[in-house]
Image (cartoon, rainbow, N blue to C red; front, side, top):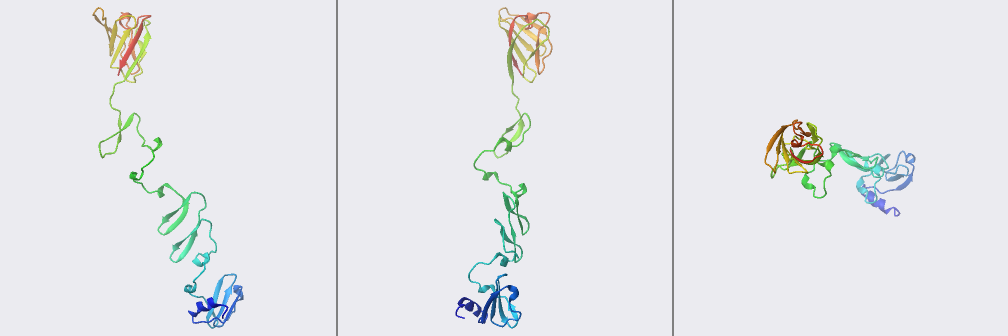
Amino acid sequence: MADLPDWFSAFQGLSVEATSFTYGLDANKAAVPAVSQIYLATDTKILYVCVSVGVWTGFDVAILTQGVLAIARGGTGLSTIAAGGILYAAVLDTLSRIAPTAANQVLRSTAANVLEIAALVAADIPDLDVAKITTGRFGLARMPAGTSTYVLTGQGAGSDPAYASLPAYAVIGSGNYVGDSTANRAIAHGLGVTPKFVLIITGTSVDWVALFTSTMYWIEVATPAVGTYAVTTMTSTNFYVGNAGAYNRSANFTGSIYYWVALG
């Protein structure tokens, strides 16, 4: 058949020379074909060849040397595939198709030889060695959670840092007040701890008072003298001034301005 050189060459491999080449609907092909008949079913896109009397036979894929197979011929049983979809072998020699159903989905394995396209979850992300992070800075929210009043401190070369309590350090506060001649007057120091020492000086003389625990030591610099006057014991909130026996020597004389420094 001079007008069918490609088919003639292709079927030489089957030792058959086509005697007729017809086409039409699949249901309309000859029920009892003769040897060498070829029939193309235009609805199913199946090419039938008769190499044995009365039997339509498929041909080996090796004779296909050009063109592209439809998806249906890939083994899915389907003739279309969704945009963005892929084909994969779910089981041996059988193709399946999967496609994303929403934005930001990824291809992942859910079990041996099983794939799906779904949203990425935390378990899908493997642990990453910190050595891989070479740029950028972590936000505070990404830092390890600490403990109140603890600080992150180094633990020596080759060791991870760790949270530790703050080292002991002195705290200091200062202020002033005007005397009012009342006993055991509370003066807030703001240290948060009980002071170990409070120094009080007057703004009108060279006298000063050193307060330890509940005893005030009065020192007159111009005329060396020492006196002691009891007041309420200091707390983490207040120290106390004013002894009714001598307000001027217990740092709370009416009208006098007093300046103080507290060490905790």
